[in-house]
Length: 235
Ligand SMILES: C[S@@+](CC[C@H](N)C(=O)[O-])C[C@H]1O[C@@H](n2cnc3c(N)ncnc32)[C@H](O)[C@@H]1O
Image (tube, rainbow, N blue to C red; front, side, top):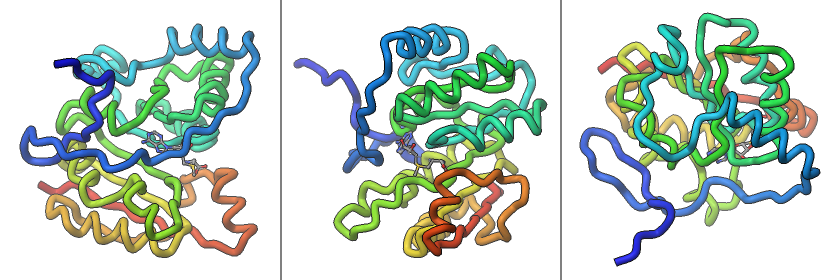
């Protein structure tokens, strides 16, 4: 029997069970990139990238003894870069599927050396199999795609079948930090996190250390207000 190129399932918590992945969480966007930019992208990925698929990673090989934070869906990467600069003792693995955004972040890393950052050009639901359980000090998901229509909600990234797989990867004491400016999505996030009894936390004040991204700025201009949720893995 032939196997598909990709295994369209996401690992779940507590066992090695996997569940079907109902839909992609992103909309493929095509924006032309010049041949030169594509060549640069390949070169930079060779230096600073981690492959979406492959064997489980040993973070010590990649970053030494720095604690590691996974930054999911960085968009244009303002947050990833600013937070990495502000805290060089913490390693950040940024992941996004959107090629021009990945190129922007790699460009910054290449020109302002940031040895504490690595970039994955890919889908976090596939990449998770490379991330060992209890190996992350933190996970950040800032302004995931809102998928506002009810029929689109199964595409949202933060949902009840994904949160346990994320929590598996957090070490005890590790933090999951979420932000959204879509009121209904904040409720979904809260419910999904409340359903995992290894998490403790909830809504917090917007932390000043979280940089303002262009996505958040656009929401503020349109009258939306961000909600931050922070959880700690306690068991
Ligand atoms: C609305 S944007 C927000 C970007 C950024 N965090 C910000 O606040 O400006 C959401 C990002 O998540 C990315 N994304 C969605 N699903 C993803 C997935 N499964 N794996 C990796 N990135 C994903 C999208 O490509 C997009 O860049």
